[in-house]
Amino acid sequence: MSSLAPSRLPPWVVSGTPRLGAGDGLKRRLRRGRLVTVCEEARCPNVGECFAAGTATFMLLGDTCTRRCTFCSVATGRPAPPDPEEPARIAETAAALGLRYVVVTSVARDDLDDEGAGQFAATVVALKSRIEGVEVEVLTADFNGRRELIDQVLAARPQVFGHNVETVRRLTPGVRGRAQYDRSLEVLRIAAQRASAYGAVAIKTGLMVGLGETREELGEAMRDIRATGCALLTIGQYLRPTRQQQLVARYLEPAEFDELGAEAREIGFTQVASGPLVRSSYRADRLYAASTDTAPSRE
Image (cartoon, rainbow, N blue to C red):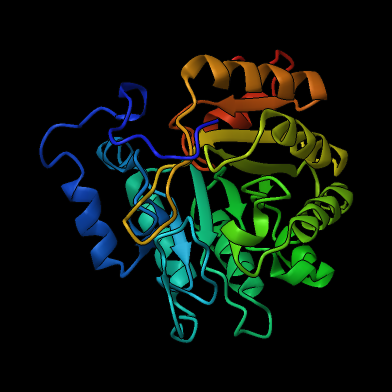
């Protein structure tokens, strides 16, 4: 793998551009609801497509994170106190948008006694109370590995509990700041162990590639993750969101993502989404729907 970032994006990581103003209505609705999306804060390359389609991933607990990861463009600092009305506003906005599958994530909130677990649980409950039959996926921080906080979120009965490992063991300290590789694995392990107590909760994680990892390290990470009981996996290309984040080491070609997806299935993941623009919450409803079918996904 090259240690230098290419000067130009390869064509397979340049997403299609929706028609001008296609997502303006959704943006106005989000602003009226005083809601934050990870789509905008993390500068997701799929934001135009998703907003034009009338969908977004809601980000709880504000737009300021207590951690500083070198791959992420979300602001770091002292966050505002949690807004107790936020879960209801998210549920109301999701209902107005006609969403039947809602993904909710958050900034890390190490400053809170419950690290944000209560806001996750309240939001899942609010969504299920407001929208009949809605399916909810949560993508949480690591809660510092606290079992009782993971359990609190699971008790709200989301369909999917997600926590991203993000990268391989060797690169974790330089990429994820205060996060720890083994602690993230433990979060997935606890969630998988407790999932059966709350019904059919699928456990999901995501990996970024192109940060300087080797193929062997990726294989090791996938095996480590699968051993926790996690069954759903996304693999996507790391893209530098601003000049303040670390460089891309390499852009993998589409065929390499196909190979990684095949390897993940051989390891035992029941559903895998692997591609240059794949993100944890991008088309998340499709991955979950495929996991409830008997036929293996080839997404």
